[in-house]
Length: 209
View (cartoon, rainbow, N blue to C red):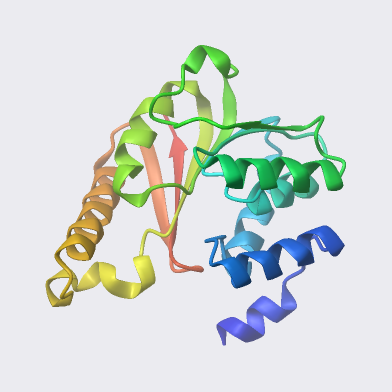
């Protein structure tokens, strides 16, 4: 059923995006799947954010998709891996989006917030899953009231409900951290969060205070 619905959804498509998807598969670069990307693109179209902050650029796939979904959006995206950041910049230029997407080749946890804009309408977290809560708390103050934070991979391949069955200790700890993050979102007093079984799980948190 998910494959059927994914086939119905329209994603921005051009030779550059197709090449990026192929590259990600061949080189095992994690990018959001089509179902999740279609959902986020729709959110961007509905909310029309003027400024978007993305934590975790990878090769620029999601940033390019969001920029193409709303032509007035300007995006700052952070990627600590120099090779991925370089590829992202190349892909962004090939899509003629370099005037609307800025790539910061930095560790998001060490980035000086003064280098960013003071306000964002939407923040997309798709980086190191063990640091989700730290990312959220660091960049929270940059989000306007009524803005949204989108977090990807909150179900982590369906393992989130049974971490005790995971043999690997490191993987088990990671899944428990994601579970703790989900609880943190659920109980947060300044955010109203809805969790969606879309893609690998997506949380949409609206800043209400």
